[in-house]
Length: 289
Image (cartoon, rainbow, N blue to C red; front, side, top):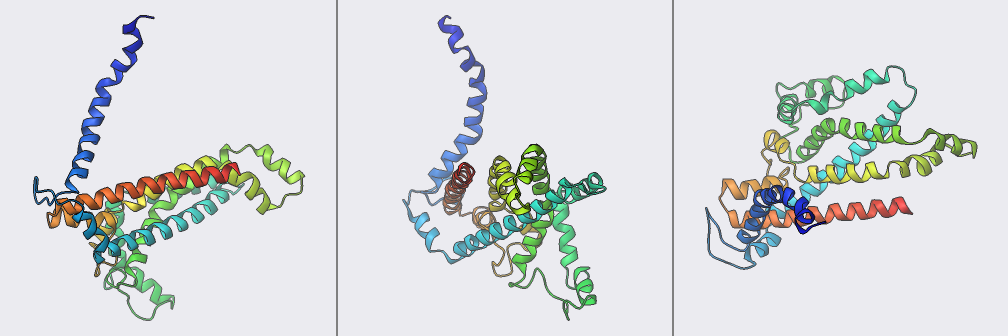
């Protein structure tokens, strides 16, 4: 093999690599640079770590961080448990399960903007449909401001995200269940394993790779939530639903504090990367145990 043919594969992919470095690498480097500057517009003077110091002492940022953590934990927990339950039901010999699977996917295929606008009208305290239904059932005795009450707003946003995200969880978990060899269940049943033991020793290990992919990709998606919050509440009331990405948007675009917003972006990037790696390590170790 001559020298030219040895390097030929690298020459073929070099243009694509160069394009990716320009499209993704250059902006990332600039964001890291801006995080050490006081930028209002295109550029600004170097200020060292002052943006990061401000970040860690800013009460609004800490509130957005708390909101993001709460949203991510409850949203993913509910979607995973509900999605797993539905997937196992659809995986059984339930009549009409193919039709039910198709119907279940409807919330997932609806565009996110349409979903948020529809739920905003449903939540409306005067003209929405949720309050009359709950009052008729005796659950509440007066109309509630689902998006205007600081105690209810985050939970209402979580409910919308859960409604839209359950089909995705169900679809992937159902595919994972179908990939598990049925002979493993038959062997476990012959050995006297009950339903809980079959789930623990057959189903759960069989879903390891699906769980790793699902939790990593959905955790990142939950952490960067923006559209639903922006349409439903604009981050209000009083910051009760402001997430890190919405906070970053307001700092970077609304107030033009580009340097400070870059510090928020860098911290978010590092945090998401660490969480994804930690999730993968934990789930991998659990599967090998």
